[in-house]
Image (cartoon, rainbow, N blue to C red):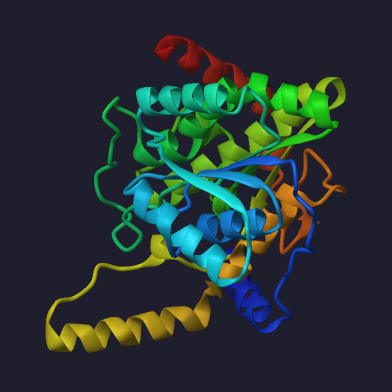
Length: 325
C-alpha cells in the first residue's frame, strides 16, 4: 500500500510538470509498423506523428481498419502533412491473423522494416479485477496472450525484415509498450502463476514479460545486426483503453460527460502519452536495452533486470511459438 500511494503521488506531481515532447526527426525513407492504432489511442497519435515526419507507416487495428485509415489520412490532410499511411487488420490473439499480416507485409514491402512498435494491448476488468480469468480462444489468460505472446509471435515473423532494414540503414529497432504496473508481479509469477487471480496483476505480468523480451532481444541482436530493442511506459493516459461503459439515457449522458471530465483531470492526454513512443521510434540516439518514461531512460524494476529470467522466458516463448507454427 505505501508503494502504491507513493506511485499515485508521483503521478499527480507529473501531471503538473511540463509535458514530455519528442524532438522532430526526419523519418523519410523509414518504414514503420505501429500496432494498436485505433482512434483515441496513443498508437493513433504515434502513427499520425511519424507519418507527418516522413515515415511510411503501416498501422494496425483490431476493428474496422478502413475507418481508422480514413481518420488518419483526414487528420494528416488537416495539418498539411503528405505522410504515407495505411491501416491493416490485426488480431494478436489469432495466430493466423498475425501470420497473414506478416506475410502481407513481406510481400508488399519487399521484406524491409526499420521500426516495429508493439503498442497494441488490453486491460480487462479494470473495476472488477477478481473475476474469473478471461481466456483467449486457444486457452491463454487474455492479457498474456494479447499483450505478450502476440507481439512475440509478430516480432519473430518480422525478424528477417528488421535485420534487412538494419543492414541497409545501419539501424532498426523494436519498441515494446510496457507499463509501470510491471512492478506488481515477480518473475516467479511469469512462469508458474500461483496467486489468486487479479486482472491488474495479470496485466502487470504481461508488461513485465515485454520488458524481459526487450532486454533479451537487445542482447541477442544489437551488436551483430544493429537491431535494437527497448521498452517504455507511456504514462497513465486517457485513451479508449480507460473508458468505462457508457450509461444510456439523459441522466446517463450527463454522467458520461462528468466521468470523461474527471478522468481527463487525472490522466495524460493521449497526445502527450504518445511522445515517448514517438521518441523511441525516431531518435537516432536511442539506447537499446533500456526502459523509457517521459522521453528519458528510467530504471525498471529489479525483477525486470534479471538476465536469467529474461533468458528463461525467451526459451519458454520460443517453445510455444514452435508449437503453433
